[in-house]
Image (cartoon, rainbow, N blue to C red):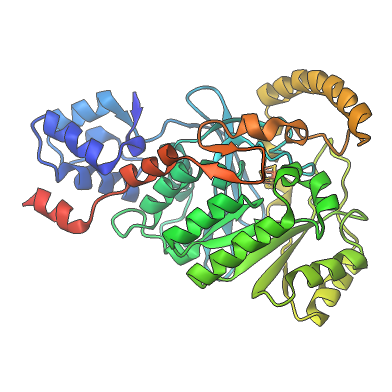
Amino acid sequence: MEHILDYSWRQLRDWFISKGQPGYRVAQVLRWVYDSPKVPFDEMTDVPKVVRKDLRKAFKVFTMQVVSHRKASDGTEKLLLRTHDGEYVECVLLRDDKGNRTVCISTQVGCGMGCVFCASGLDGVVRNLTSGEILEQILHLKCLLEPEERLSHIVVMGMGEPLANLGRLLGALYRATHKDGLGISARHVTISTVGLPHAIRRLAELDLQYHLAVSLHAPNDELRNKLVPANRRIGIQAILSAADEYFAKTGRRVTYEYVLLREINDRPQHAQELAQLLKGRNALVNLIPYNPIQGLPYEPPERRDVARFVDVLTRAGIQVTVRYRKGAEIEAACGQLRRLHPEIASKSKKKKKKKSKAADENAVQTGETVSVVSGEGGNGKPEAALTDSVVMSGDPTVVVTDVEIMNFEEIAEPETSESKRDSE
Ligand code: SF4
């Protein structure tokens, strides 16, 4: 059975036509899916009964099953979803007192970037999520809202590197932001990336008004190579220059995310170096005090060190915000809940055994400690991890393949005029 949201508008129209139905059934059925995702095909009352039966046989709206649902006292809710092929992904609903209802979604099962402080990257990437699976997370979270609540923002900061699955992500966001889709403003969408320059430029060319957040986490390549191993093939300057182009083309200020790890990247000299790096750029720095993860050796910064870091940046004229994580008691940080699931925990233990052997060998060769290369991405996994969507070549360039971008265009619904013509 297929995911109905993995079908492009045209594919769905062809499917209806093959059943002797007019093309406007696409809009009719998708309206139900976006507005009332829990309503089964059988209860879509304006669709002929015979078509409802065919829809039920052919498609599903929800292909992922909720295996864990946690609620925090601050209103944050987190879901662990099991995919049709037995993988696990997470998504989060965040509430604030201004009435914003933000969904944080994943784009991959696991992550190939290997950031050493992140639970999602610990076992590398398993596969890309499809457009339907990305959108389905939003629908699952939408179902948690009270009747008076509305989804207002999307942050693509869950599991995975979003720009490593760009085409499928754009397909999902197109529908999430389309007025005939979920209708969320494109200006309320933030895509967070470790910084894949080619994909950032591709995104800039498309000028989709999404907000770009670059996860920097270190002010120099030496430290960043250790914290974000994918940086070894890219380098901070290449990322900054792509981000500058993004700002020049879209006019949207880029945010630089910086997770503060005690005594690793939270020293005054790091703040000074960061200020120097971003000097003259219209940038916002978002400091995120680290949220400890079981099994990882990193600690949150002292409050006074956070204040000092903010002070150094502010004095240098850099705009700064500090984001304390929501939903800490429900393991809301990326990848934490998934790793607690018994199936993942046991898979991970087996992988860890294999990996520690490899890491020991690697440590001898490179002189680095095992903790620094603890993500699989730390020793060559990124290339293998990026699979069909992105190829990371020997130089720092990341190439988004034509196939991937075609997938985005294919899934996009045509202009309303075409929909209108169909309904005539
Ligand atoms: S922080 Fe983001 S990019 Fe880094 S490993 Fe985790 S999910 Fe991947």
